[in-house]
Length: 89
Image 1 (cartoon, rainbow, N blue to C red):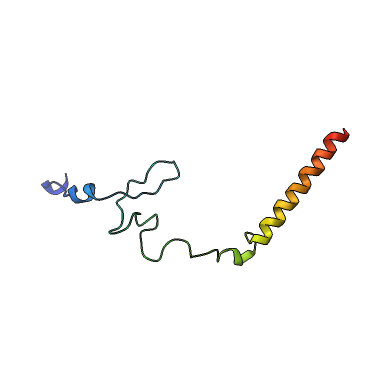
Image 2 (image 1 turned 120 degrees about the horizontal axis):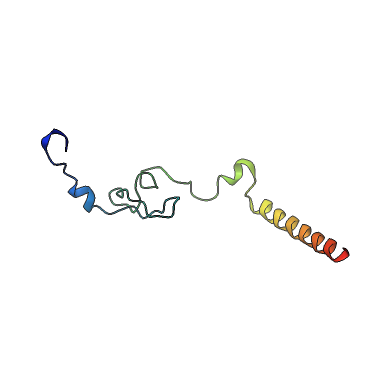
């Protein structure tokens, strides 16, 4: 205790906790932002979080529906080729 007085941590300890999971898989122990279910680091703050929709896919095209379908088709073709090579050997 610094300064000779007890810290007033009661209200913070009684506040609701963030509902997010950390990278270690444990629950986040930070207090949730007022009237939200997440803390300021996990999306409770105004203006944070991902944009609505999939606007980030347009930046480079890697995650567009067409690109994902093309990769799946290529993977299936390579799997068939590997299977054919195993049968020949």
